[in-house]
Length: 411
Ligand SMILES: [Zn+2]
Image (cartoon, rainbow, N blue to C red; front, top):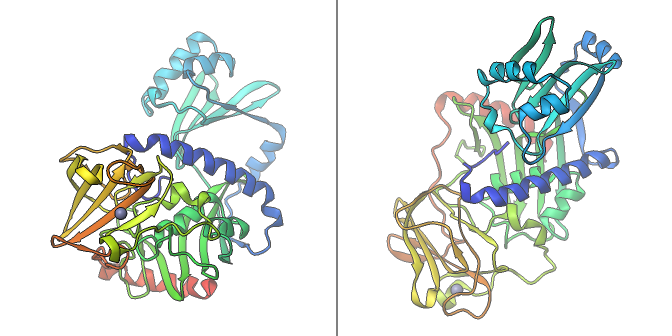
């Protein structure tokens, strides 16, 4: 997971909340997915070993959720019944492939037993790798291996009614996939203020299953978004390092130097409804900036990579951050209640830089957002920043293939 941007320490608290929300919503969705009507699935690869299936019916499976303060040593003895001596030996084996201090709270250990005797157990290191520990004649074998998922593709489409977020949920999307779609189109569509009733969305994405059970969504393969009559397409092409890159049909990167908005849809989406007051307060004409209405404490993300050139009190601006993004672009964020970056710091697109407030000359909590191009103030929502590099020549056939495969499903 952590599909888009680098994690920074300052983001962890918010990420944590997001993850919990995703887990809750995923559970809800998987429980009720049977009643979803507009999602259709087709099996892509089936990875079931008949022998394993056979075995599974005889073995008992249980899980243990790692608690605050747990250690492998404690879990092995108390939850798995392994002796102290054997646990120490096993930990030495594990240390060769995994840093045991990285054990994560809330992650799950899956235990397989037969007649209450331990056969094997696994610990998920992350969403792609697991530690598999199996009992052998004279001890344990420890393997670090890729998690095998069965992948099914889903196609979901919908029309925005109350909000994009709630319409996405109504269409059967998980919280995570709604955010992923918003992220993929975040350079073309301002999800915090320009979404309208009647906007359309459709997407092809992966659902992952592990031992027959829903294990979350995988990649967003292709998407279409119609915002105020403008139609956008985006297709996934993995680069040579395996990173996800998205391109339109002309092979242009949908990713740009700057995001459309510094208020993360990921973090405020559920509160945004088209029936609520329009979140943009002041217009550009009146003060050459955009004011976003948002509660005090709402996280603010930098719209692009760059260097912090101002951080601190700035008269009527109150707490103020300005970031130079290169290529002649800079952005500024005013009236903040909190600042999380210092002057000179390097930031990545999407990094948390501060929180909405009402400091300086301000009548209430809002984000005053400015954009500079070659030193002059420009309209942040109407100025297109340069695109990332277009698709490399040798990857064009992959994009063509994706368009052929998915475009019809998106329409
Ligand atoms: Zn303002």
